[in-house]
Image (tube, rainbow, N blue to C red):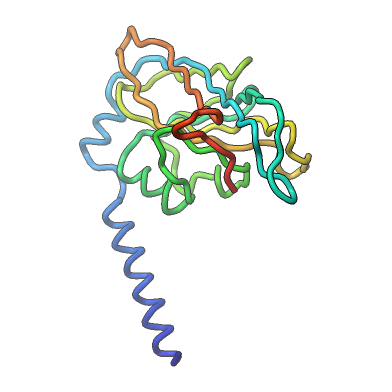
Amino acid sequence: MPLTSCLTLAAYQRAAEERASDRFGEPGAAEKTWFEAEGFPVSGTLSLTTHLTRPVTGGMGYGAKETLTCEGRAIRLIPDTPRNRWLLSERLGWPLKAEGVWRIGFLAHWNWPESTTFIREGTCGAGGAFHFDQAPDGRYFVMAKISQPAYETADVNMDYDVVLKPIIVVGGPARPQVDVVLDGGSWLSPVLREQ
């Protein structure tokens, strides 16, 4: 392939990235109004139940189910906007699935690529309990660091996994607790650990 073709391909790719970035630019007036609307506390728990089978060196292994939580680890409440969907899927490489996603805890899966002005952040308490002081009703993503499964080989550089799940927050001042559950044992759409 001639060098000019490589440069043309690189220029085309760069232009496509710039168009996508422009299309999913900073929040518009409607989104800012929503972010800044009166918010109420959001409380709940986050847990993940592992699958009975799991990939191991040389094939598949079998073991007891575990319940993993975000206890003592960071959690985020991310507004579900076109910009944040683009950042999650294109910049961080997250597939956006209704049942949620469970990934090995690389920093690249966690580090938010832009300002977190409109993202609520906190730390989970006992049993994966979480609380955010102010959030208006609407659609969000919960992103949290969770404990690794017992079968994972200990690595001092990675002591957590990361999960992402869409949720809907409703009820205004009388909103119910939000229990975020990811299930590896689901028959229809199990949440399995990904790279």
